[in-house]
Image (tube, rainbow, N blue to C red; front, side):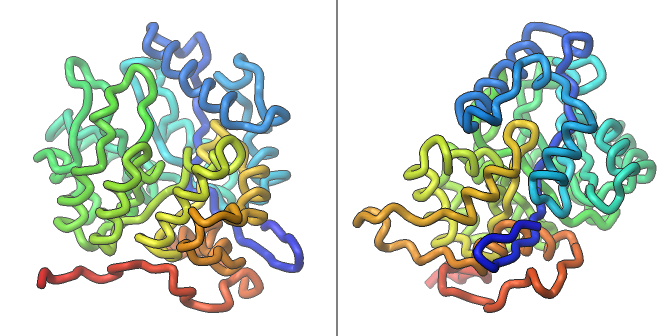
Length: 346
């Protein structure tokens, strides 16, 4: 919980990792390059006092994570998003199995999400169901640019992906997080394109698709899809740290998201350990648009809107109980969404 100027904010960090990119777990030059690219994001977009040394960044401790999220980071609940990358890391980069250790140890702090690999076809489908039965995860995180043997990516509307999404429905999984955004070396930029979200959001209206990183650098494409599809949400991981490094760019991002998607469809995330939630929460609560004409057509971001983005929207998707004193006071500030329900053509 964060409190500033008499306003209280319930904080759900919608995207955290407990990764292992240590030299012992790194299989090849691609794994070396991947964590090095991650570190460049961390180093270049964080305030100087929050930059770790490279060795700690590759494999941080349980104590680091609990301290940064819950002791100083204001986080009330954090959601683990799994990313395997087994072509790069021997035991996987950030697996459901590893994240489950902390979820089981701190069940009041963490929500666990799993993942699936559609390119394994029928075998993958069985593995996914078995893993769900073992770990009882709540949602899934999908990484469409992940390498698998000769494949350099897949699409959400591929046949076996659709079969896995049908399995999600059958198992009662409703929240599907998809990395659609910045490229991380050596993955292919085009494999993170947002276009395939359009079809599957319509095909599966009972699933919620949280587009992580809000499609950056394809924000405009994402906004049109997020406006059209009532079950598409924007996850702010990677977009949030621009509030420090390029505040005018962040103002443009959040202004466009609020205009097109509306205040009920945007979720805060730190992407820990890429960045720490403490400074992100503090800067977002203090955030105001620059005072020049370029930002005149964006609606004011009130404390109630910030409360929704920082925690209430994610709490609604995951049925997380929120203390009454941290609920939003009003329901709508006129920031959108432009089309919360499907729109018929004229």
